[in-house]
Length: 448
Image 1 (cartoon, rainbow, N blue to C red):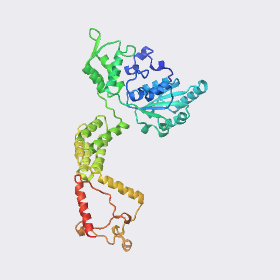
Image 2: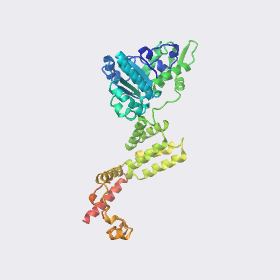
Image 3: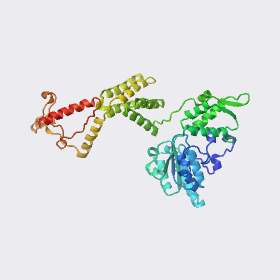
Image 4: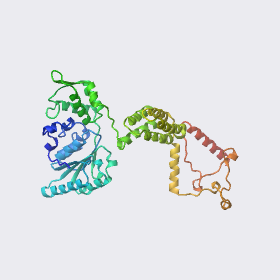
């Protein structure tokens, strides 16, 4: 566990060892004035600005994507509180460390009348037992907790602890933010690259801002790598070209966590694009998932569910195609497996839509749960034994094939007679189903 107590310990350039740390670490903002982005939190009269100015202590959780300033903001806020400050990473610490922190916090309060601010980086890494160890001590004020996480707190932080903290959402930085951050690094002679003679071509600068995808850490470290790759000319000037920037970036990394919120966000966007009959958007989200390493069979499973839930009888062939796509992918595999996936996605997106079967089942399920196990009408019961036959099982049953394929009789429990669950739409083949049911209902009514 690393204990940090003063602003100089956190942010100052102290030794040659510190200067060798990555540019993103050296350029970490030391106060809100140096901080770029998150204007909705750090701007005039916004929550963090007011907390820092008034030195108000409340437990916070900073939630946002990588490289947007979560840990930095936590440091800045904690340091402004004039409190005893302890920082550790959830990756490296356990319940034993938490107990030591609590004991130290109690000593600070007892002997020095000082409150303790505990910064937990990557708080989502703590399991339930570790999070529970905080509960009482956050509630009674022994510690003020500041957590930082890339994961949705509602998934990763247990409800009791979450209710004791204010969750602040940090947004992905835009390209203008990244340009400003990189310019500061290029000009800063104390912590940045200001002591070097650098010429960075505009298209190289823009490329780094674009490919960093809102991650300031990636932008700064790519900038530093680009400068190091650019060989000094005769005048000791380093010229960073687009090609050098591309080489330093290597590959554009996509924000995607197969176990976290972005996983659910993107599959939701994929499903909603197909439901909204937008094949272009559906293909984009498909490509995002495949490029980011999502399991293709997970995608196909969702497509099979979609074909039945959202298309249904409007186009019964959709379900067949989705299942065939699963078999085709199994047979082909990657890298070419995306081809049948793309074909199926465009078909599902363009197909007529109906959730009538899906909604009908939910209506039937509601009756099952509310009314319990209703008796099967005697005329549609099976009578495999003489006793059952004597009791009237199957008596009065009309065999449809002996009556031209359709015969009017009730198949519902008596309590549900006349109930209609399935209401086909006018879309695609669903309309044919609707017309058939309407014709039979008309025949039935004419016989009454």
